[in-house]
Length: 444
Image 1: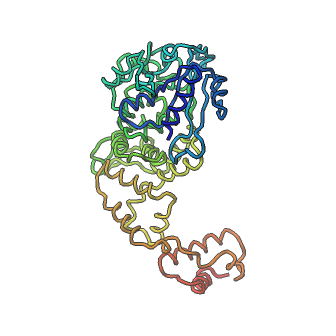
Image 2: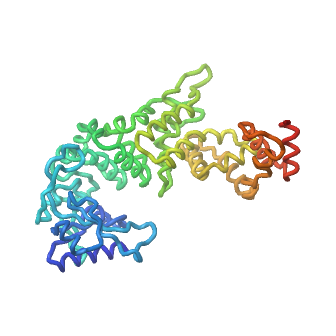
Image 3: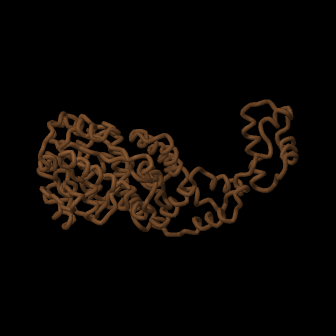
């Protein structure tokens, strides 16, 4: 268990004559009766001393005084972090890039180390041996008050590391806390400087906001702090974009998206969360008032293009990009499921990770007209169909076509697709039937 291993690290460091405590988010979570995702240890031992005491280590951030001590392989549990971060007490000097200190000075005083950290609720120390909490920054009071407050001057703290502005929003949303007035004002003043942070770091913070269970509140806070138009201007553009009230009684595109985020399951995959956020991203650019009603012509196609640009800019993996774009691209198809040919419906429900498509449709309905009839129809169809009828073994292959005298080329794809449609619709059930169908409909 990671907690026991972290306690053993503290004990070992102390036996070597060093100070050592739990620090940061794990202390906060333990005091809130939550299970920490990871455990961090802070100590007056230098990285070199830590690596001597624990021979099996990774000096992932040794220039900043950070060493990872991995769990023994036989103690690693699935879904649990497999290492404890051990950081040397330090003070930071200069933040030229607005993210990392230019250099660090090691310290012997735990108070000095705490005072360089981001928020009071993350600045608590815990002695895991006797349970004593050391609070030099008022973190316990802010935990009780439900307040996110920087340690010291907020302009200085955010000036050191611009990512902390997004972290303030995330913590406030996650714990349903308020952002302290001075901290909030500093974020509004410095919001435009968030561009100094790498897109990958921004992506990771936004993903956590979307998947930690309070996505709607997180995006409201992003909007209120002025960060939203900086990190996701395409989402900010949804504000005030009206929708036809007969389909969207909830309000404009931004309101609809926020309600959809509010219904995200917890836990939630990153791809579903981003698909939910971006499913209507093409609407602001395609808004028009027609004689009959408000329309968003081709908003899906436009949304896919906008989404791809956003996801590439945020450095998403190819797999995640493809899945999120597929969610955008297919979210309107549920409106046609009753009229789909059997083959088309079967191909639809065998899309990769179709459960996410189905869940996005459910969320979309709940955030608008609340009509779940298409959702229920597809679910019932999936339950009633045996897997082999949805993904049957092909009746013929390209080799069969070559043997029959057909020349390889683009026509092969058309022929094989037509045979598969016949198979999915129950019109073709055997190899000979399939070849006869080809001869009749695709003569040499």
